[in-house]
Length: 617
Image 1 (cartoon, rainbow, N blue to C red):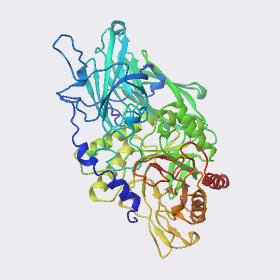
Image 2: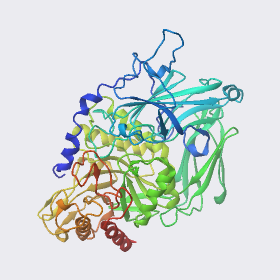
Image 3: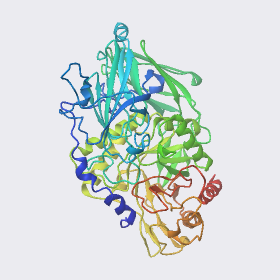
């Protein structure tokens, strides 16, 4: 592992003031944990988040929500107790908070960019939504009801009609609460307290190189199910067979032991299984599958049905495995023509299907067949679109440089977020790897934590390789030797190297000899900064110009094309993105390594990458 680069220290030092401030957050008294965990191959409790939300009966709560800014989080304790949602009724009554339609925020969306005064807020905002509901009719029909959140950054405390439902920690994965029997006939009020303070015991930790967008950044839905319902399922080709399909289905509710019918009409599949007392049933069958691939992203309509419930969605079937230093897709070696991207567009958190479509269209325009979703799970819209567009994905946990692996309950947090990420996207053919960490520092506690996390990922999903990204090596006597104690625990190695930017070239690029690590290796990050429209010499890094950035990539490819065992390249990054630790006048609070500006305009380096990828097809 190479020494820390200046930007690593900058990202950490810029965040030191938040270490003490974040400790001041206190949870609401008597709060419960959210139903945000999807557990193993045979999920064990009703706490699992509902899979395939688009296929369910739901009512969107998106739109305008009343909002109350609470920068010191004073409303979460017993003093103000905003969650009780009280209104003064007598002459002597008053409360030092209140909601009205003069202060609103749009959901989904970050709160930072919706009002200028909230741009750099790292604190609390309360959201309030009123909605009508016919609770009596639902009770007569025996319907169950859940409130589902696609994501809230970073911590959310949820209240319904003044009563606490529970809390959830983690800004990028879904969670839900069952509210059957808790709704009133007529008008109801849902309150959500969202706090985006960086925490020393958070995931990510307090230091990171992207913008800390807070709020209800993803969809909020009311979801109805029958009394007994299809809760979750997993279906995919067995890793060792082009015809063998295997998986499981889970039923939950009042009568979990059910007959389940699985149909894939295009394949002539009509299978019946019976769940056990816990609601779980495995299955397997053979079929003549047209496998999913970037060149032919074939999807099949899959339907699971019980006497009370039915779910269907489009699913692709493919095998993605590793053999030696190769990645194999459907048994054939695969070279990943990739690019990194953050979940940001138009200077805000990307939050809609249209946003995801725009980003993936630029990925495809570049000539890429692969995107690394940095540095956290992105919106479900993107993974579903990638299925249809034929773009492979590296989906990643926000386990980043400054994480405190020794913090109390840290391992439980890591495993919860992992389960939420895998539970949402395990049926997406486009998701190639589960990324468990980026640029973490070796230590006994880190090595043990991530080794256990990799093992847990394989328990939750035995069909996908586990990946992690590491600091790049130094070059000594012309050799680049990569190594980390975690290599033995993972399947795919990502190397983040910045020769020619953070690290000067010690030799000519063609003279670098990489030593094979014995497993598939990607260059998961490499890049240099340039501000759009700034032109000049191609050999002066401090000029921040497009010519230098383009020449950086030309030199990189002079080296990378000489690595015979390389499985892919992933330039950093598709588009310039906000980062408050970027302080130079040419940066202006943006990481300028994008191939595109924040407005989507191409820099000279775009064409360099595009031309290289055309030759790799």
